[in-house]
Length: 401
Ligand SMILES: [Zn+2]
Image (tube, rainbow, N blue to C red):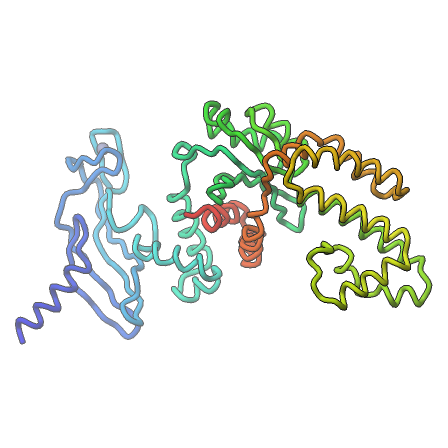
């Protein structure tokens, strides 16, 4: 019996053995276990690691630890305020808890894992800690693991913006496209915002970036030109989106002017018009699309223009794409679809980046899954309360931390 008891004791002693502390006593109440630790080593300086320190003050500290079965577990220990010959003055180094934290490092680690899977509210309920404490623990834990730009050499990057606060404010997100990882996030979407990324990366590495994929956003263009020699590629989905916006505008106009019978025909057909023709597989859909287009000349013309340009972007030969795009500009003029003219002039003024798209065939499309993740993070409502936290959560969940 004696040997069994001492075996159990050894297990606990092992579980609560830290660098300078050992298990001294355990006290149990109805809902709580209090683990009392005893100092067995010297007080170390956190700045220089020296253990030749002068103790100024000693006080008792109690922190939360991982639950023991269903019971809340607290660690109680004596902590020293020290003075060191290196000039440091403050709390001694402890391996199991950070200075001023209310929770042990093990508990913090557990909480930061939980918050990747549940909301802060859920995590705070689970650990019976207040919401703010859980958030601060998670923030610090992510900050500790952030990827240092010094350790990576990106050559193909994507620059995106994310709207938050109902679209009034933006974050600039830089991704390493081949690695499919977010590597940097900055506030706002100005030239200076992206400049800060290149400054952090350093001029040497910035000049090694070969391709930068982005939307047609002048401040980003200016920054990439100033800091790199990269080819600027405009995302084809951005262009197609603009085209579809025009097509939809024409659809709405035609609908508003149509007779009652035609209107009936057009109802709930938006999807059919905006979708690529080659992706429609349902016979019924194809038939109803054809019927709709037959009865509407302006809509038919606009639809053909949309399909034409989408086909051009799917072409595999860059040279033929350039020629076909020029022809498409002419087709727009010939069609008389004036609504398309602003898009034509937009594409014309950003032609270099479209041609680079034909050359490299790169998009930010990896962002499909990325955008879903962002929405999940947004829904968990981090972003609206604390944008720094929102930024860290994106880096954590899309940066492969
Ligand atoms: Zn020191």
